[in-house]
Length: 211
Image (cartoon, rainbow, N blue to C red; front, side):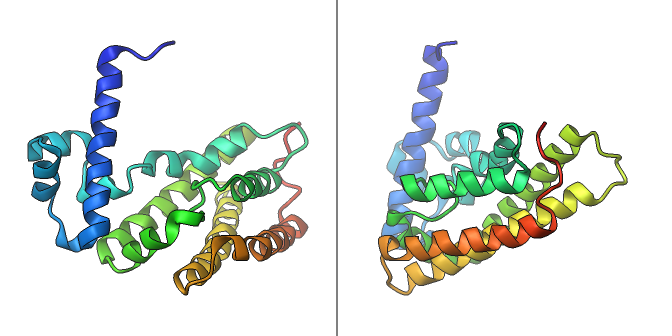
């Protein structure tokens, strides 16, 4: 179904406001820019900004809905014979190979990551996104498996997958912030991810294999 003119204009306006906001945040620092500053630079009202973004943090983290749904989508779309563990590892390695941003590690991300680390409100929002991503993953696993509402296993599996991703990516991010190039980190990151997910496979890997 093709995108209508009204929907396209709304999408383009949202993207323009986010791009302008990101430029201001990068130039001045997140905490030194107000929503009014963004509205003025984008030539819109403050109310218009909030029509598109619920919070100031969402102006920068504008891909939050996609990130929060990522693991649940990967699990729902996995191939026959794949477990949630193997599906997430496959998608993570694909993101590394293609330089995609979806797991928070990419060549141009070091300045962005430094800015997030210096703002308590951004740190809190990123943590909230991770918690939402984990909860939606657990819901996707439980729904597909027809798990009993009192069964904690889907939540435990989701928590372990999310913890492995967070640990591996944070390790790489710290190295980027310290000045290492993403290309130099990539081989080690790939190896560490395979090792970490291998530990999961030996424990929970056989659960929820797609038939």
